[in-house]
Image (tube, rainbow, N blue to C red; front, top):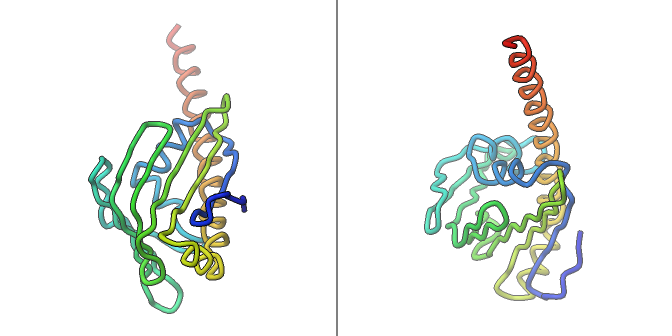
Length: 169
């Protein structure tokens, strides 16, 4: 958890052990989002993913007890590979927030800042009491695990490619 001076904003910061391009792909490509979006143990279905400014996104998470948790929004700003801003609703609990993803290159790692901006300070405090830090914390743990697997996969592909090139010589 990170304290933010803005009384309407929840901020979570992490350093991710992956290059910025890989982190950006994890946030922007549906085939990667399904691997980490949502708390541990929850599967995510991508219903809509129109990744451009003005494009809509909608994900459904099947929660224990048979209830669906719906995450949806509209992309407001995209600056690859550094910034992603979207409106967001997390139904049935949260509506009308803005999510900001800020990525900064740190050599082969990525400085990650995630903001959720609420309409009022009271709404932000309500979300904190409902466990927003735990929910996103779990999702970002899954993101870090996914990135770790992705880096291993990319490394193995590079090794195979180099071996193939050496065999061709």
